Amino acid sequence: MFRTPQAPSLMRRIGTSVLLGILIAALGVCLEILINKTAYTVVEAIDDIVIGILAALVVFAYEQKQYRATMEKIRVIAGMNHHVRNALQAISYAPYTEQAKQIKMIGESVSRIEWALREILPGEPETKDEGRVKENSRKFPVNTPR
Image (cartoon, rainbow, N blue to C red; front, side, top):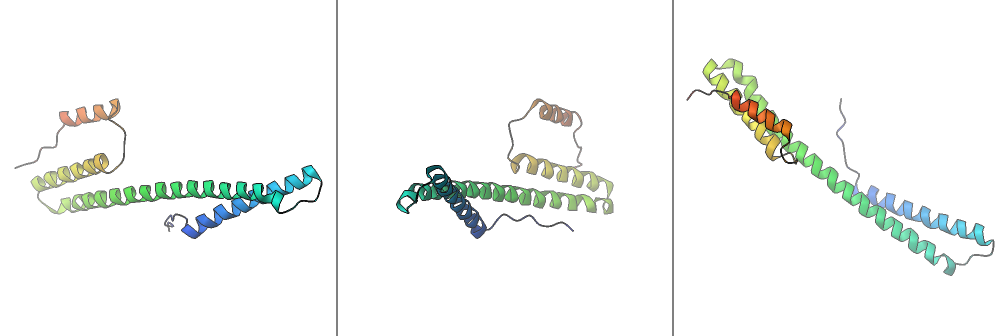
């Protein structure tokens, strides 16, 4: 039902960069021909070719940066998915255990999810709202039997 997102392949990133570089060089040549209205030689096109190559390199560097950022996000999401699913698996088995163990299992699972959110997700320093949540969690701790 859902399509797995995929980052563009290396060949696609290179192809996009080269195509854009060629288009920029061709546009430069066309504009110089229109402006000068004289015969145009290959030697005169060197500056347009250099600009096209530089544009292709800049676009490729940008594509690479975006690719790395996307792959990092996928890695973080996969890590979160793993930890949260494991914690939810324990919660799903809780109804089939004794009540004392249920509370302990759910408390441990919530702790694992909180750990994953705190340690795996790249985040910013604690805000006032998060401090309020932590303050409330101190008021209402999960009692686990020993």
